[in-house]
Amino acid sequence: MSADTAPTTTQAERDARALHDDGHPIAPGEIAIGVVIGRTSEFFDFFVYAIASVLVFPKLIFPQLDPLQGTLWSFAIFALAFVARPVGTVIFTAIDRAYGRGAKLTTALFLLGGSTAAIAFLPGYESIGIGAALLLALFRMGQGVALGGSWDGLASLLAINAPAGKRGWYAMIPQLGAPLGLIVASLLFMFLISALPAQDFLDWGWRYPFFVAFAINVVALFARLRIVVTPEYAALFEDKSLEPAPLTETVRSEWKVILTGAFAPLASFALFHMVTVFPLSWVFLFTEETPARFLMIEAVAAFVGVLAIIASGRLADSFGRRTVLGATAAAIAAFSGFAPQLLDAGEAGEAVFMILGFALLGLSFGQSSGALSSEFLPRHRYTGSAFTSDLAWLFGAGFAPMVALWLSSSFGLIAAGGYLLSGAVGTLVALWLNRELARTIG
Image 1 (cartoon, rainbow, N blue to C red):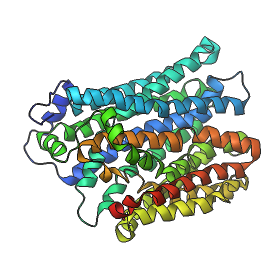
Image 2: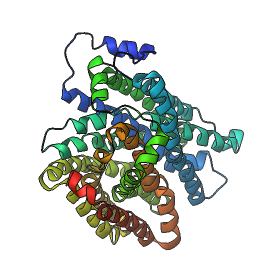
Image 3: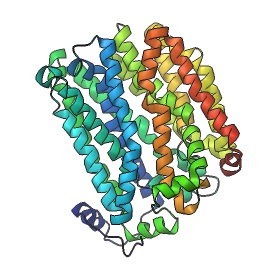
Image 4: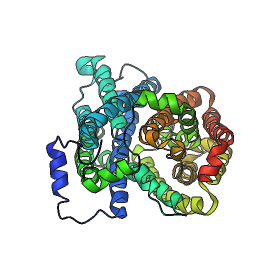
């Protein structure tokens, strides 16, 4: 669809275009800002739900179960978003092709915000019984479908337009949204837990972050629409072959790249949940540590993650992205052998685990996104990158909190380390098998 024929069908698109009617071209820095704002809003939604999955939903939705079983069921519902995400990619790719990227993004982000806000009104088990769990599952799948549709191509556009010798630096920019979203979500929940009596927090206090998430989504929508609906960037998307192709055609033509790309970031995606969602559940269930204090540790460690992501850009440009991905996967494998046990070593051990974990996560996660996107044929790059990202999150992260908690509660924390090791091995095998990757990002 060309820039001249792409329809502008929503009031949000018209308003976003009006913000840019002064005629000056959008600078590359504005793309980066739009990418960071968009990714931060998505990850804020993600972590608000993740924290509530540990602190709220086991008591609100599964009070008839013991705390461990309730948390495992809560994590099972948590995983539904990752299962639904590829479905969202299928649906919203069709919307993109028919109505344009602006309509797709507007619809997806309102579905994401609406599903998130709906959770804020969720009644508990005491009110509607098992219906509470069914509603939570429905809203969680709505979030997943919306996340599949929120792919706007800006990160790929940023990477393609990266100056020579700066590809690693530009690749890390979208990844900053994850630790930034965690910092905001952790501090907000920490404040509410500290300021409210426990019963008030469980009755209504936990709902407030979900309303905040909806408001942030509206801001993020305009930040991203302001770029994607402008004629200059509509033309640039088309010029750089960042237009949607049919998913079935893309999978049939590019299945080898999709599979390799889905497994290449397994180490960082497995570690992602091992230092965010899982440790909060372990500390909350099996130690005397207060949630508020551990959320502060998470926020501090996430700041270390921000610095490590920035460092990953410098390292990748100096030594190659493949080298950084391989070296960090090996380091994560070593980390898995001893680090999870630190969660049973008191407050100092928890802090060491989190800070070391986020340092490794930042170095790895900073270069894990779209490592193989340039291997797609130009016609399939946009759709292939989106679908590969969906599969990488599903395989590497979707079930990680549930599996890690079940393993560690059944066989000890060393078993959770074994799960993390499997992700590191998956990354190393994928990098070894893909000789083209060495020539593309080395």
